[in-house]
Length: 167
Image (cartoon, rainbow, N blue to C red; front, side, top):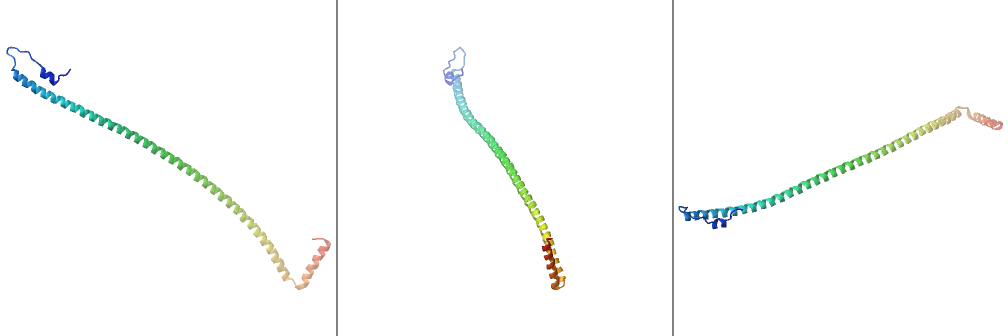
């Protein structure tokens, strides 16, 4: 058990014949008591400072742990947002590709339909030209013939055919 200043103060030494000077010993003990009391006060102050610093250290350790957890949570949230954005971008790309394929297929179908219509129109134009050419040639032939006699001959030939049923 450590000594207290009171223990030092109350300490009695036995007396002998040629012993130490009692006043000198008492003065020294008084000085020891003062120094001992000062050391005890300083020790208590240092202990209080240690406790205060330990509390601050615990506070900062808790703060550090909280910040560390917050950073981890923020990083996880950022990663999740990043992954969700990638997934959404991939979905948008797939949807855009589907729309592009649909548009291309519709355009190809329309172009095929138009190509078929063009071919049909070319055929009809060729038939029309042939018929028109035939008509024009027949009209030219009629114009090149001699007058009304030829027309009467054509009319008579028609009547004969109609009578004989050769049409």
